[in-house]
Structure formats: C-alpha cells, structure tokens
Length: 364
Image 1 (cartoon, rainbow, N blue to C red):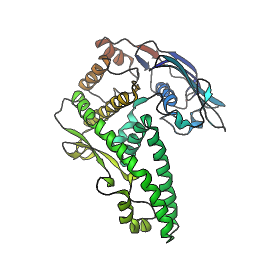
Image 2 (cartoon, one colour):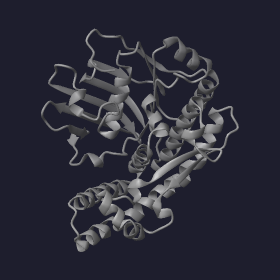
Image 3 (cartoon, rainbow, N blue to C red):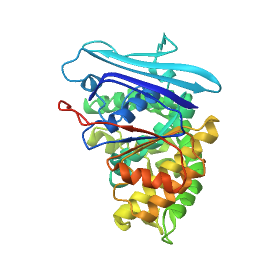
Image 4 (cartoon, rainbow, N blue to C red):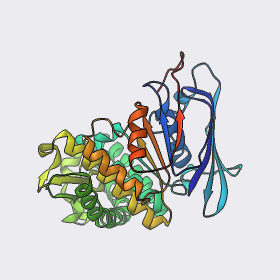
C-alpha cells in the first residue's frame, strides 16, 4: 500500500496544500507551529475517518472558513484508490471511497491501516488502563470488524446497565437481561484481546532489545477479571457493590494491558528514556502484527519522534527503517539538518517538504 498524493483545503493551518510522494520516506520540516503535524493528522483522517489531534471535526476547519476537504490517492494491491473526507460547518462529515459515500464509517476502518507514533502517545505509559484498552481496541478493530461491532454493542449495554443502576431500582429481572447481553459479547472480546497479546508480546520484547542498550526484560501482561472467572460470575459477585457504586465495576471494560520491566509495573520503575524506548517498541510491534494479519504494510507516521531520544536510540530506530522492513514512512522534524543527516547516514532516499510558518495559524 502506498499513499501517492495528498491535498488539503482549509484543513487546520493549511488553506491549500498538495503533496506528491515518490519515495518510501517523506519528511516534513519547519518551525514549531507551521503545521507539520497537521499533515500527519490529515493522513490519519484518511485511515480512521478522524484526526488524532482534535476529536471535534468542526474545530479542524481553518479559522473563518466554511469547510475543509482532505483527499488522498492510494495504490492498494495494485489498484488506484481515492479517499476523501469533507465537512461543512453545521453539517455531517462526508467520507468517500472512489467517489462513493460510506453508509457507515466503520466500514472503512482497517482498509488503509496506519500506525502513528506521536508525543501524546506517552499516555500509554503514564496514563490509566483506559488508554491501553483504547490502544488495544484500535489495533484489533483494524483487522477484525466483528470485534469492533461486538465492542460497540458491549459498551452500549454497559451504559444502559449503569443508567439502570443509577435509578436505584431493585428490578432483578431487568438486571439479569442486561447481564445476559453483556455475557454474550464479553468472552469474544476477551479472547480477541488475549490472542492479540500473544502475538504482540514477543515482538514488543524484540524491538525493545534493538532500541535499547540496556539489559532489562520487558513484558506485557493481560490483566482481566476473565482470567479467573467467567463474565457471569464476575457480574454476580459484584452486584451489591455495583448497586452501591451505581455503575458496573467488573467486566472487560476494566481490562488493562500492563507493561512490566524486570517484572515490575513500568510506571513505578522505568526512566523517561526507557519509557520512550518502550513506547516506540510497542508501536513497532503493533506494525508487525497488523502487517501480518492484514497482508499489507500499514503507513507509519513518526511525529516529532527524535525529540528527547539519545543518538544511540535514534540510530537504532533509523537503521530499522533503512532495512526496508517497514513500508511508507512519514516523518516530521523541526530541525531540518538533523533528519537529513540521519537519513543521509543510512543512505535512505526520501521526499522532503519544507513547511513555512504562516502569520495566521490557529493550530499546529
């Protein structure tokens, strides 16, 4: 899979921009605030039907303009594909593949896979379990459409059950109906997550060893109540606590993907340098899992990835790139000389786009 060209109209800081890609590596350089990350955000839209910078679509329209439009031309399995996303203020977002509008946006997820490594991803390490569940769910949903449907239904039922608990009613039969519905989807979600962990864990460990000069052992542990009890038992055991707390305290919506270093939880043990290496290793492992299961290499987006990485880690990361293990890669960097020196040292051809700082930009 390749992204051959990208055009932006009134998208965030870009009024009118067009890029053609001829090499496997594309580099966007320029000062902070110029809009480098916005280009990656637009590519993210073409894969996920939404950006990663701001979840509110209308706020991605350039200040004072009535709409935004993103268009990308891909080559997928030797076929040309055109993907577009447009939004007018006050209207519904329109997403099209080859000029045909999708009935449901979920139909597009996973067709053009993408892996992003951005500074905000550090919440996977420092944040709570919700961030790691979101990561896990996003990856699995790109290659397993049934998983996404089951997850959506499960979460809706949890919301209904929580609303029922907040009413303080003692209608046991209604609670049993909701429990039965949760038990229908929970085991399938649990098994998919467990299978994903078994695939990604050894790859994660491998990439960490490549990126780090340290000798620590890293591991992933799937922390779930279903490791010990069936969903039915979890709900039955927690029913009184649920009534008191007025929400569903047990279930796969409380799962966690725990990262450990030498057997200890990461947040209690790892330095900032270790955390950055672990984050990159996790995302590169994600890339390999998706490439294997989808049969195509995802796009790899590296946003400001060189900041706060020492030279050894940078060299190790870009050596991986030079081995052509990955597919098409998009890189942003505020230091043009740094990225050109790095890519030049590994003899890696690339497209370079310099983005200038405009006087009126409201977003980066």
